[in-house]
Image (tube, rainbow, N blue to C red; front, side, top):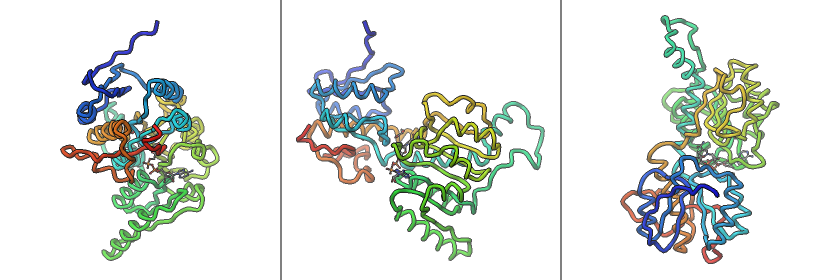
Length: 362
Ligand SMILES: NC(=O)c1ccc[n+]([C@@H]2O[C@H](COP(=O)([O-])OP(=O)(O)OC[C@H]3O[C@@H](n4cnc5c(N)ncnc54)[C@H](O)[C@@H]3O)[C@@H](O)[C@H]2O)c1
Ligand SMILES: O=C(O)[C@H](O)CO
């Protein structure tokens, strides 16, 4: 017999049953549900990461139980079979916007850590190897005036680009299926500001192909969704056209990079550096990656700030609650701030439902 799962129950007499597969940060999301007649069951097992297949099973179980909604506590939903959710009449929620700046900040941190060899230098220092200042010790790359390449200039890609342009006066080259008009306008205006102050203006370019970005950029950060078009977007051929001392950052999804090919590239090109938040086979790294001094690796923490994680929990809970209440879907998933005001009642809407199913169908 399968071992029973440990759960914590809030408001046991609540009319609507909501299950959280993990304990989520903060308490507002719990209050919002229990104040609205929900019985909340939180799975307290230490490790409950659901695979794509687990979620498929969950959908049919949800349907059998008369359930109507599932929400990821994440903006990315490549782990969810949305077609299967549609077949089961399940609305699928996600948590856009609240994590944009936090994720971009981590991508910027990885960029700096890789470019300036922070982790290597830290390890050297702790190992007691420092004997005094030397002209060649941990020489890295200067970012100012270099070109930052962004692949996937959506919410996070654009926020990252702005940080690197405004912070380090980098020029921009980007590739996206859509034009990033607001980002372009920002760079133009910032360039004019710099020029008016007697400084070298920054510039932008929308690349016709991804290869143009890879060839021209000194730093490349990946921010697309993961789907068939972006799987192994960085492959051996594309690694080969990048500058030998480029910095590559990935805080999108692991499979966007062919990680085996990346390890080979790092071995062959010691001046090439990467900063990775995500991995092809999480929680594992491909063999050899952990030994590479020119790789900075962190465990999928890009959205890990207290405010952000609490906000993600709130949005995920409100997606589910909104479906229970029969609320419409919020019109603009890029503007979710009204749901995040701690002291205010959230708007009567589901913050973000990706399969946009009308409440009446559910
Ligand atoms: N590491 C983390 O913890 C973390 C945190 C948040 C988001 N993410 C990942 O980042 C992704 C982006 O999030 P977002 O909020 O910026 O989403 P978004 O939808 O605003 O941006 C994604 C962009 O990718 C572009 N795109 C899609 N296919 C492309 C292709 N083939 N080539 C180039 N561009 C393409 C889209 O046009 C869009 O502009 C998420 O889907 C998620 O997987 C990771
Ligand atoms: O897609 C997301 O939101 C991340 O992977 C978790 O922050």
